[in-house]
Length: 265
Image (cartoon, rainbow, N blue to C red; front, top):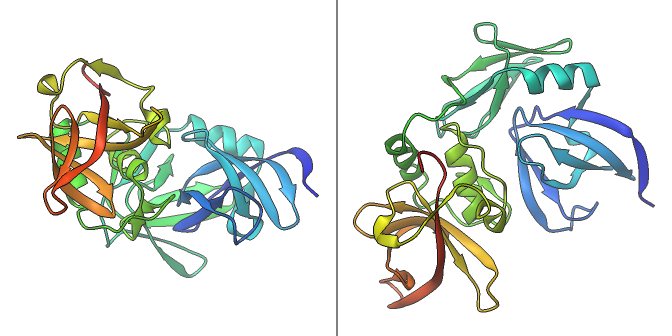
């Protein structure tokens, strides 16, 4: 039986934690927490917590053993502190309690003292180059996105070991100071509309709908009518006013709905 609890708060100190639609290891993974993510815990069911992510407001269930509970004062302090992120695909890590945790890019760090982050009584030694959470240009976004090429598709995934289309855009843009919501349909509510594909610029987001008109896919515009997106894997395809054209399959795979610019509209 699900039980409402007095709201608690958590800090993710593992590299990646699956967030599921129901309190079961067999339930669908809807997204992932990454190191440094802060959450509200507002419900429990057995050994599971229902959480709400501070970064994007996304809700779901996690194994209670995979989060570190913290007090409201520490949660408030961290959410008010400056956010930093890492960008390295394979080399970044953090050490605590004699353990080394390898990090995925787009992890979160707060209130740093040199290479040390303090969360209540626990110290985390950061072995990574960190960047302030601020926009530093669309060229940098494109460079980061290209680093994920050929990463496999994974529903709910957000790392180079497996990601979905909106997980790709969210984690890439996070590394450059743009806070996107989690799902493609949610991301489509952000930013400013670009009227025509011909007016689109590299770094704009293109959204695609299904036959029922629901937005189900997102990708990052590149130069020369190309788009980087995650469909089977992170790949580059052609795009025109109709949608994404896959030359390997010889057909259109996604129908273009709209284009949004997140910064500098």
